Image (tube, rainbow, N blue to C red; front, side, top):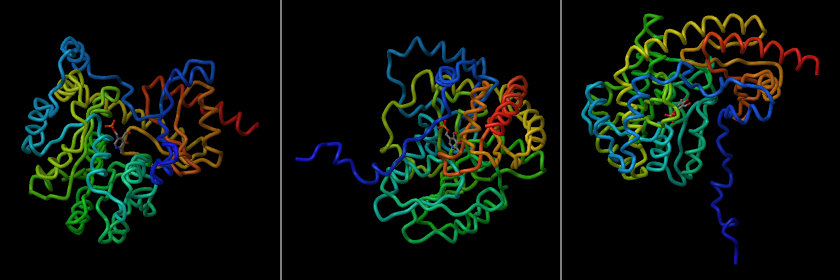
Length: 376
Ligand SMILES: Cc1ncc(COP(=O)(O)O)c(C=O)c1O
């Protein structure tokens, strides 16, 4: 008789586990010094104080199960986005919803498409759902929407589009998205991952462009578009785990059948509601992030990296050194950054923008680490 470990299906055996940004305590143990984390695109300016107060208050009610549909938050989001509450599905982070959508729509023989150098979770959830994963080459470091359209066949069920893209920080604007969406066939679900939408809107405005009309597709009754948003980035609540999708009510009911019941906790819903109302905190986070980007970009270029202009809260840079070795050297100088080698990009690092003090510390750590790499 075979052992259970020999019976794990082939598609699961072939998966490699998601490698997250290293937790601060682990990095400090490894490197023996105090570390700051600039590796997971979190908000370095902290959560909204209003959210913290709401979480504290809600914690006295955690003897009760949460409202599994997060109705209060759903109502608020519906009003905010001018859609019906039934067109919103709240999950424990948007990663959970990406997984739910893959599990709902994929099966052996079916495929999902995205760009090279995009969010690694797309690959994991596709393969875990027994789908075939197709990546098309990037164009100008970001999504090549025409190439994605050309890759669609009758077995395609999902196209994952990250805008702004993680890890390259690239963006495309509303007209390009309209043109793309109008040509996607109806048997394909477009998962529009707008985790960095607040940053995207900020940068689009700066370039006098319109960021995205993604919610208009849902308002117009389009069944095969779902827009994903999260409280993990501009709202500063990555550790709380709240995200949501805006989409067709009928499709969202299927996704709701696949999700885990009670996955959004009582404090998580309360914190998200408060964070949504704290617009001043979001504005401040976006402005300070833009200052950090402007400070870091030229300095990183001076250091010899190829730096891609970002429309998010992180910076993608290519190096001629081994990125994993370089990231380790930077960690040994007190800053955790992300080597993109585990993402299949063998020559790049991704750095999350920090506070002014963190950004200065990062540059110092990088300069020292590069001396070490060149000497060694
Ligand atoms: C493109 C993209 N989508 C989704 C997420 C996941 O966010 P959440 O914390 O809501 O699961 C991230 C997080 O880094 C991301 O970069």
